[in-house]
Image 1 (cartoon, rainbow, N blue to C red):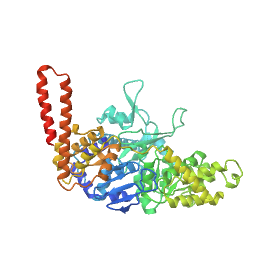
Image 2 (image 1 turned 180 degrees about the vertical axis):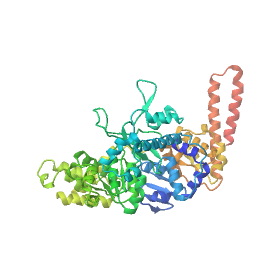
Image 3 (image 1 turned 135 degrees about the vertical axis):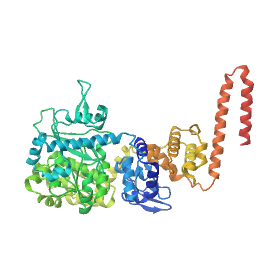
Image 4 (image 1 turned 45 degrees about the vertical axis):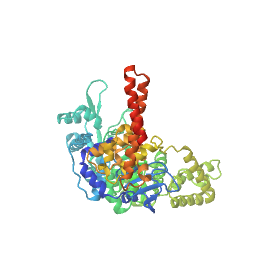
Length: 581
């Protein structure tokens, strides 16, 4: 909720409203989900959980989505947030660009992210100045030995973090506080004193940017011979502007090239990424020191249908490549895996063999099944051993990662061709894998915390033809709701109405509240006239009287002689009102 709230504090409500009313959620969701007409709505397989029968509905009329299987729900903003890992601000900016809506700011970002981004941008300038100056001689020589040109270094904005605490001193001189430097991720608090010190020292720095090119973190490579307790690589920490699992290094730069070539290459390391760039392949992205996440995989799949994984050629890198392929398969895409010879990493291999070897590597990419089987040697060496059944089950597990029936059949046929097992037998194993997933699945959101009473009131507010101008919103109070969730959603509705928002933004809620809200909006009938609003007000008035009656009866039990007659009189009057209703 905080990210949405902060973005509403940063962009004017009028700007956000223009974006909301201009974009079409069917168009937004339809880029990632195959939607088909179902009555007044569109439906498809849910992108947030595995299913064979579509339970994911998108309403163009109400500009929201809801899955009746897992409970996921929201609006166009929250879809990008939940599916691609965008912040609310990024989702607004992305959709505004597509819709041609000019965003107006209402002042400095109340969440402080502007300050952190200023610090990180200033840090990049500092690191760039250092690599160009006398303190960066060692760094420049190191990069030259690794065959990186000045053009690539400039293009990637590679910098140098000198020894000592020079960056912290520089930024403190510009007026930033110690706590701001620590929260932004470029400084650490000293354990032995009250001060701070630079997180990155004696390291080559790779700036990590968000999807709009703003610096959000850094990755650092130690270039001297490290001691046993000095890691070769360190990455910036999670911060208010950086979540490792939601961003890919080089993503913004790769977008145009990946779409032009209809190919995107996934690597693990910063220098692997730099090597492909040096070779003229800008369509490359890297994970930031973590295994690939679903959010990252979705971003890759959104750019190109031809996805190639190129990890280190050693056993650890090859196993990681197979795991990455499974994550991409889950998104309904079939990746290829590039095999780097002699156990080398992509950087070393391409540097030694020249840029001309890249097309050979991409052309020789294998599907995940053949690549995984190749890790174990030939099938002829396995089929006579006791582990052959285990191997086939593992291969079927890889194939069953996908929800796309064509991809699954393609991979099962590969397994059948390579091992001799029939496709029918393999499909039986797929069914078993699916049963296991269902058995251990804990992704379903239950909305039992909100009852029919609260649903009826919230539905009347959210779908009132007058919108937030409805007298119902003015009439209702927090105490009229019978569940904590219902009350919480009502307060958010009232808050947005007070901020001048004309249509409710589901992205202002957390995931479970948004799910409950989208379920109501999916199933609640249209409110075409005053009658629904009147019946809600009558029911709430009755509820308020009943609550007051209960309070008076409780007071009567312990009342003194002087108060009994007055309390009885009040109870009688409320009783008469209830009878008249």
